Amino acid sequence: APAPPGQDFLNMQAHLSEEELAVRDKVRSFVRERIKPNINGWFDKAIFPKEIVPEFADLGLLGMHLTGYGCAGRSAVEYGLACMELEAGDSGLRTFVSVQGSLAMSAIHKFGSEEQKQEWLPRMAKGEAIGCFGLTEPTAGSDPASMKTFARREGSDWVLNGQKRWIGLATIADIAVVWARTDEENNPVRGFLVPTDAEGFSARDITPKLSMRASIQCDVTFDDVRLPESAMLPQARGLGGPFACLNEARYGIIWGAMGAARDCFESARDYALSREQFGKPIGSFQLVQQKLVNMLIEIEKGTLLALHIGRMKDEGTLRPEQISLGKLNNVREAIEIAREARTVFGGNGVTLEYPPMRHMANLESVRTYEGTDEVHTLILGNAITGIQSFR
Ligand code: TGC
Image (cartoon, rainbow, N blue to C red; front, side):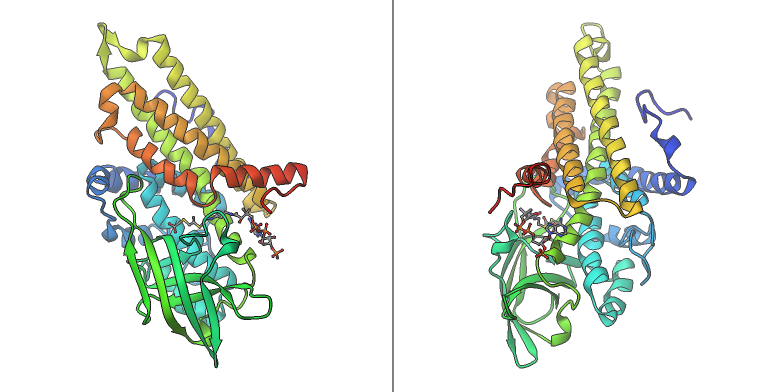
């Protein structure tokens, strides 16, 4: 069937391979069948639908861009397309895939020992084990270097103390990747694999939230958690370790935000064609058409940007500040689009019956996590002036 008016306006799909289109279409169908009919209930009741995890695994979405160890080994563009389709469903469910694959699995894949990879990655790819990623703390958000969580050596063991906040999935996770300062020389940040049933580990959901209600974010406490020497990720030393994982998650957001924006645009266009005022569809009014056009322009630009950044990632030339440009722009525009789309629905737009306000609320978290607008602005400021403004 021909695409509805406005969809893929610049024919981006002409620049996608058969495999890429197949990934996009598979995830799009899944979102249509499994997420769209249920998301309002999950969001309203603040439920993360854990039963969907094996379905994500069957689709090859968990650690999708990683190779070996039971992971799907797909390209960055394919992973991005999957994120875009998932987030057209809901940011909270795309976040699950990001935390599991881009953060927790990616940390183990990049920095783990062979034994750690063998132990965790195949189970995580199958969705049999859930991971979380502990970097942010109650007093260390934009500035993870100021973290207080500390691992001290006791014989050959490590003893971990501290707190983490805003940790996705921690209350349902089996394994936590935890970043902590250590008493090694110069107190470098190191990563640890902490089983969530370890004595002294506790997590609780942060509630009530007005954003990403279909996903879980938690406070986590480590109270003398004793870990064997083998719990440390051997290949990561310093903040470059966690930041390399953040690059992966920020990359997925560049695509994901455009999925949420597209869902807002499409629902607003459909509504504008059916809702009548003054005896005709509101889509016939110039002011409504202008809103739809402005949304379309930013979606097309943002999606092309995502594809360009994805191609650079697949070529191996992508730099962190280029990821910042994509994340900053696409989330900022997606929020504007969600707000503008909401106005097309008038009062009906503030209900869960239509998606823009849910996406808008979700995107407030997306603009904040993985580097706020301010952090990405200043990363870019540093890149174009050579002057670091943080310190
Ligand atoms: P700085 O001195 O700039 O860097 C420290 C070391 O890290 C290296 N590095 C990177 N490496 C790879 N990729 C990047 N993007 C990197 N950025 C920095 C850097 O080369 C250096 O290496 P070395 O070997 O010289 O030590 O560090 P800084 O502390 O001054 O950084 C400044 C700033 C603000 C850019 C950084 O702190 C930052 O990005 N802050 C934002 C933090 C953030 O994004 N937090 C998000 C938390 S995770 C999350 O939100 C998960 S949400 C999902 C969930 O769990 O639900």
